[in-house]
Each structure stands twice: as structure tokens, then as C-alpha cells.
Image 1 (tube, rainbow over the protein chains, first blue to last red):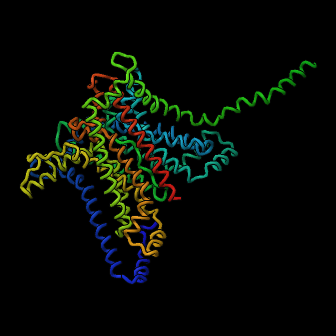
Image 2 (image 1 turned 90 degrees about the vertical axis):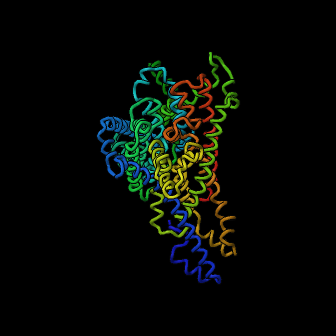
Image 3 (image 1 turned 180 degrees about the vertical axis):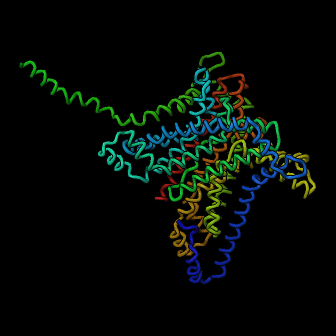
Length: 286
Length: 304
């Protein structure tokens, strides 16, 4: 992939062949100026809210900048509790999502190529059924069973649904890059059972793909609000919303933390994913 | 003795027939059974419940009233109007600016590093939605936001006192754009990369200008991707709940906000109507999905 349609080395050649050289050059310069303007506009739009949030979070002590809001936010025991819950939900979601998606994607590649479109379509369903509608359906269907509603089962199930597009696409791209059939048959002829094949042959070969899926899921679950709030489970998202309604400064401090967390997760995904097929960022809205 | 032989013959004779039956069931399906079971329990059955119970009258029994109420009750019609307009605004706006941004970093002759930076950042920004995003914009253009204070100190105008508010469709649109156009950049970048240099050269050799190249070659090729992504952005905004809720509470009457309120307490005083409301969303999103898939198929023609 080149970064522009015209690699730098070829521009002079094309220009020199053209009689209207100054005009062509002016066009290139015009495009460049236009591109810079658009880029700078994008940059301002992207960074202004982040700078504003950061600046706001520093203004807790009157007339001076300080990290007081961060100190207050981090000395709150509830912060650790809610954040810890979100981490727990993320861990559970990732575990179940992997156990569901990896064997399915593997099996689809190895034996059932023809159901691949169906499986792919299902993994895109979170786009058709938004989180708020899914919660609504969950409660209509399972709401009257106390033994279901009192556990985080629906929450984790909802998060697994949210993770489907990311997880499936990542794992699917990973499986395409390896020779599933040869690996499986080689393992089988050496006497491996399905457990060994899956956990010792397929999983390690999908490390990069799985890690992308894991960190994308982490980024989604850590700040998720809709499921946790409407199913009434403790989590970082509803906690942030709750203190946002009551206080100033600390919510902004935690928003900065949340942004850094998203940045770190996606940064890891993009770093380990270099050279791997592009990760689609399609998922249901939050 | 002969009986035993007969029995054995009979079993041998029966064997092929007996073996044919299990062959009809492909055991390979068992491998995907857990996935389909999960999808059934946590995607299809909840959606089906919403569908069926949309036709449930207040006292029980079958009715079409909930569906017709979607088109007649003013609060519901307004919620749909608001949700649809905000989705259209941010889909078109996000697509336009996202396209220009993708064009700028990929074909605009900017340093290569900026492209990597922009795609990385778009990956982050498209995932930065929900409560923290709402707070970020409140800290920017809210009553005590950075931009608000700047305008106040530079122009001596208190925009919020002058009747300006960010807690309306336009304010919320600005917030939604933050995760909308990065998504456009992410999808358009590979599509712009896919424009072959030969196409441009062929156009130039035939005497075509830059405008003609975009008008007759590049844009028609990119059109399915552009439209498909626009549909995607539309759905993305249409289903968003957390961002809107944290930004303006229930000030802005959106369909997801109304559904959320219906979950927390039956605000419509009619559970069946709540189901119909959710069903309407599923139907709109499903149409979007079909549009997106058909656009993607068309777009794939040129990437082969």
C-alpha cells in the first residue's frame, strides 16, 4: 500500500511530460493546502474536547491548576469497587466470548464453510438490535425469573453479544491466515484429541487475533453504561454517570482516565495487529 | 444353525439401510450448536418476544393498536422524528467530513506519519462513546466549558445567557459526530487505497481533468462504500443511548431514551406500546442492515 496515489518519485516525471507544468503544480499545491486545512480542522475537533476535559479536571481548587480532582476521585473507595466490578465483567465477557467464538469460527473454517455467511450475519446482529432494545427484550423474556435477574448472567450475555462483531472478525481474519485443515490433520495423526487441538494448536496460532479481540472487548466493556444501568448491576459506566449528576471536576478526571484506558486498549490492538488484515470497527451503538 | 446364519444375513442386509439414517444428520452441525443456541437465547428470542408482545393489548389479547399508535401518538411520533433527524444529520455530516479527512491524509500529499496517526486516532475515537464522551463535551461547550469561557473572555459574550443551548438536536449532533466520522475515516481509508493509479492515469491520458476523474471514475467506484458507510453511521446514531442519556438526561426526546424510561418504569402506561416502540427500532435497523449489506456487495466488485 502506498500512502498516496503518486509516490514522490513519480510526480516530477509526470509533471515534466505535461506542457502545463505550472498549472499542474498549482493544483498539487492547492490540494495540499486544502488537505492541511481539513486535517487541522479534524485535529481541533478531536483534541479540543480532550483538552477541555483535562483542563476542567484540573480546576477543582479555585484560581489554580491542581490534580486535586484526581486525588479525590482515587481516594473514593466506591471508585475501586465499581471499577473492580467492571474489570470482573470484562474478564467474564472475554472468557465466554472466546469460548464461544473461537471453537465456532474454527469449526466453520474446518468443516462447515457453507454456514460461514450465516454465522457472520449473526455476529453483525448487535447492529440491528441496539443495546437498549436488547436489554428491553431480555427483561421481557427473562425478567420474571428471579434466579436469572439476581445474577449477572444477562449482563455478561449482553456484553458477549456486544463483543460478537469484534471477536468474530478478529478470529476469522486470524483463521484465514493459517492453514486450519493441515494443522488439524497433522495434530490428529500425532494422536491429539479435540481439546489438545483447540487449546494447544489453534489457540496459540491465533494469539494476535485473539489479543485484538480481547482488548477491543475490554475497551467496550470498561465504559459500558446501557446494560449495567438498565439491568442494575454495579459498574464503572453507571458510577461515572451518577457522580456526574452530583459533582463537578471528579467526573471529568475519571473521563480522562477512561479515555486513556480506551486509548491504551486500542493502541495495543493496533500495535499487535500490524500487518494483519484490518479490524472492522463495526458494532452496535452505545 | 441356519437360523443364526439367517439372522446374521438379515443384519448384514439391514446394515446399509441402518447406516443411511445417521448419514442424513451431519454431525458437524453439533460443532456450531453452542453458538446458535446462544444466538437463539440472547438475540432471537428477546427480539421475537418484543415482536409478539407488540400485539398485546393492555388487558391481554390481540391488538393492532400499539402499532398504529406508533404513527399517531404525538410523543412517540416526535421521538421518532427527533431520532431520525439526528441520525440523518450525523450520518451525512459524519460521512462528508470523514471522507474529506480520509482523502486529506491518504491522497492529499500530507506526510505519511499523519496518516498512521489519524487512523490510530480514529480507532480510539470511534470507540470513545458513552458517558465520558458526554462529559468531555459538557466540559467543552457546556455552561462552564472551555470554549464557552474563551468566547466570553474574547468576545465578551455569554453565549448561554444569550439563549444558546447545547442540549438540543444540534448540540447532541456535535457530540455524536465525535464517534461518527472516525468510523467513516476507518472505512474510507482502505477504499481510497483501493483506487488504482492506472485508473487515474488512464483518465489523464484520455485528456480528463481532475474534476472529470472524480466525477466519472473515482466517485462512482467509491459510491457504494460511501452510501454503505452512511447507512452504518445512521444506525450507529439511531441506537445510541448512553451518550444521549449522560449528555442531556431525558431533555431530548429520543426513541432509545424513551425505551430506557419505559424499562425503568412504565412511562407510557402501556407495556405493549413499549414493545411496539422497540419493534419499530428493530425494523428500522434491519432495513439499514440490508442496505448496508447490499452496498457492501457492490463495493466488493472493485476490490477483487
